[in-house]
Length: 287
Image (cartoon, rainbow, N blue to C red; front, side, top):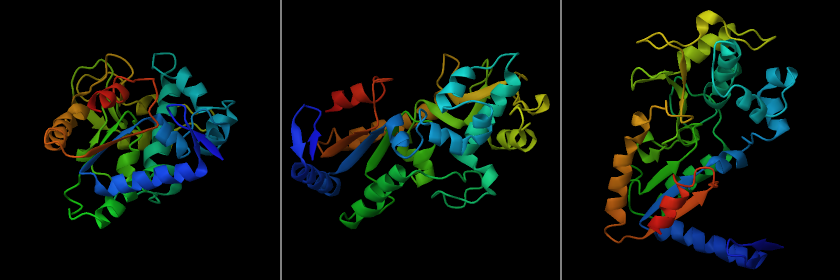
């Protein structure tokens, strides 16, 4: 069996095992690790938005309505307006439920967030594996305690998977937002709002025949009364301040390790060219 490297060189299976051995040694011996993660990481764990099987399993009501892939319905309800608002919020709540709350599974917790009252959705295996490698396994060989974590995560994903796997918020920089929060659609404020109660209300009252939300369940901005939308980067209305606060922590992390000429391992996982200026190009610059 052969494997093609990024440079075009073919690796035999034996050479690939050598690469794995080198990576294992680096994970143990380097002073710090920075993970750059994109959508491919979640796709590898099963959240493949182009896969009909995934869509049928996670969104059976929409499959019954004739949709076959997640992208089909996401592109249809990319933005809200007066004519589609009931369908928009029905889908908005349905996807947030699948990725975060798991309301339909009687609150059986399927992730590693201890005692969290909201997030009961499953954590995907690739994220669980990363937690095991960066936290559990790495610290078997190193003197630092788990509270002195020598890693940082930079991700364009908005599905909260790193948190679901057990990583703390202050070690995660996610400048594209978080689907579990709402913001004013204008916006009239830089505040963002936990979406749990909004989603729960919609899902408890949704019309399963049409997957439309009730008009009275549409999330409204507490300050101006306008519709609220998910707090993810879609256009220039995105409220980014709560998410870029961790840039301070990230820059401190870089100063601590890079400026002191420590050994730092950068790992890109599932990062493509959709938004290369966020992870790919900055990582190239660091290297």
